[in-house]
Each structure stands twice: as C-alpha cells, then as structure tokens.
Image (tube, rainbow, N blue to C red; front, side):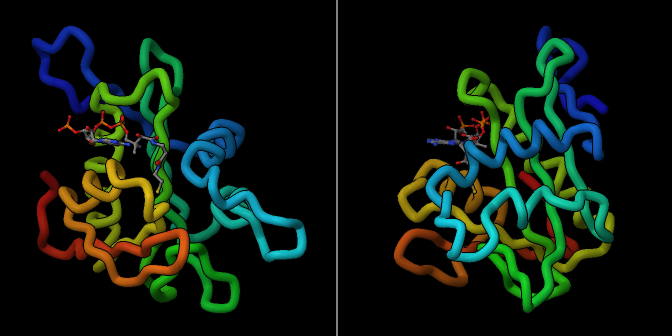
Length: 171
Ligand SMILES: CC(C)(COP(=O)(O)OP(=O)(O)OC[C@H]1O[C@@H](n2cnc3c(N)ncnc32)[C@H](O)[C@@H]1OP(=O)(O)O)[C@@H](O)C(=O)NCCC(=O)NCCS
C-alpha cells in the first residue's frame, strides 16, 4: 500500500505489520515510551503490555518503509480491565502506540501511519481509539489533536486521549 501521490518522488510506503516485525515494534516502543521504563516491581512495562504475545485478537500494526527499510510503526491492541495499558479506557477501545526513528521524523511518516491505522480501526468497527502520551510531549499531543484525539484523563506524567472513529474522517 502506498499513500503518496504518483508524481511524488518519495511517496510514503506502508505495509501491514505482523509477527515478523516484533523486534522492530519493541525498538519503536523505546522511542514511544522511553519515560515509562519501570522498576521490575512496578507492574508490566511497555514491552510486556504492547508487544508481548503479539497476535491476540484485535492486534493490528502498520509499518512505514523508507527505501524498503522500516522507519516507523503504529499499532493498536485491546486490553482487559485487570491488565490495562497506560491509556486504557475500556475493553472495547483499542490503544494506539506510534513511533518513527529519530532520523526519519518530520517527513510525513507519522502522519501517514496515523491516517492508515485510524482508517483500519474504523474499518474494523471500533467506535473509538485511545492512547497515552507524555504530558510534556507537546508536539505529539498537537499532532493527535489534529487527528481528532481529545484529552480524557491526566496524571503526573501522562495524558490519556481518545478519538471517536465511527463516521469520522481522518485529516
Ligand atoms: C510523534 C511522531 C510519531 C511523529 O512522527 P513524524 O514522522 O515526525 O511526523 P510527521 O513528519 O508526519 O509530522 C506530523 C506533524 O506533527 C508535528 N510533530 C510531530 N511530532 C512533533 C514534535 N515532537 N514536536 C513538534 N512537532 C511535532 C510535525 O511538525 C508535523 O506537522 P506538519 O505536518 O504541520 O509539519 C515522532 O515524532 C516520534 O516518533 N516521536 C517520538 C515518539 C513519540 O513521541 N511517540 C508518541 C508517544 S504516544
């Protein structure tokens, strides 16, 4: 799948992610959740929550490629109330994670990944999607707001945001 115009010399190329991308998703999580590295006793960390046992019902990923190499990923996963993600809202609302490698940022990969993943969630019939973002990450928060996310909760270090999906269009 390609989201670029045909006359664009470097269109953003995306493909669906799968089990073969687990190592890359794990690497991307270190960019997305670097501030949430936790002590071993303080509950499951990001990798255990967002990547481990990939292939559960609902698990969906999109990978961005630059000259054939993965440079970013966005994915979502459903969580249970007794083992929630950081941006848990309810058991029917998948939670999104996204990151682009530092040297590929600012070239449209993040926007393309978000558009594609929200389209997929909408096509899969989810009424909404959530995420957790560092409250100091103003750039990412602004990006999410452009895609329809609004703040629904906040604690000392992070903000939970939700975007409605049914019937809405991505930017
Ligand atoms: C957030 C992130 C995925 C965006 O990816 P990207 O490829 O750089 O995004 P794009 O190039 O598509 O840019 C999209 C828009 O968001 C803005 N933006 C994104 N992150 C930004 C930041 N940290 N600061 C300022 N602006 C930012 C860009 O300026 C751009 O706006 P424009 O289209 O008007 O120029 C990427 O910056 C990233 O991986 N950040 C670190 C991990 C992270 O914060 N993940 C989110 C945790 S929930």
